[in-house]
Amino acid sequence: MRRKLEYAAAWPFIKILGTLPRPLSRGFAIGISQVVYLLHFRLRQVGMRNLAMVFPEKSEAERARILRGVFTSLGRQLAELCQFPRYTPENIDEVVVYDGLENYERAYARKKGVLFLTAHFGGWELSAFAHSLHGHWLHVVMRPMDNLYLDRLLQRHRTMYGNKTVAKDDFVRGLLAAMKAGETVGILMDTNMTPPQGIFVNFFGIPACTASGLARIALRTDAAVVPGFTIWDPALRKYRLRFDPALELVRTGNLEADIVANTQMFTKVIEDYVRKYPDQWLWVHRRWKTRPEGQPPLY
Image (cartoon, rainbow, N blue to C red; front, side, top):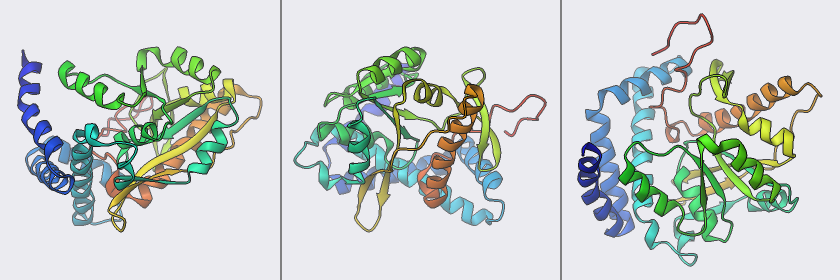
């Protein structure tokens, strides 16, 4: 019953954001997100804690500006997500443009599969959606939302143009099958994990328990690992779906050491993007919640 009530409360906003002209929808959603910023003390507290750990040299006012920017980014993406049914191959370039598509195409042409390395950054929900509108459907690894009704809505929007979802509990089998078929899988690799699925690597110089599955699959299948991030570009007033060249994997012959080294490399790619666009990453997530044995909690 509680989940139905949550969905009923959210549905009017979803409907409004999906029917308004895009600029108004964005403005309305950003306004909602700023209200959440003001009212949701716990999220604000987590975000400011993360920013203090990562950017000790910045003032509290500077960190607060970054965090408010994160909520603006979330509001903007919410509006776009609600507008998904209105987007077509003919008009998607009004919202998202490619940057470095040749890097993806070169990796895909190897026919060994592509692992699309990304994060909860910028317009991450737009990445797979826009790519599929151009005929490049992919598998998306995701954890179902707690609210079943909102989860169904998101699933419907995400899979409109051929994308498929891979549940985290079927992660390995799903990825191996996709790589064997030469397909593409998108993986959000910036959430807190717990052992044994996660291993500790440095993220902003702080040990962070990080999913090692991408490195394991890449080393096993020789799939290409292509960083891809959907960045809000204020000059263009659009998102740029940026693909970087495929990463060269570390292969020393020591499998466990190579898993750690490659997981660290993937994490460094995410860190570099976050440093460049700090107000587009999800600072309100407790990324460093899991601690190495013997270390005190950070939250």
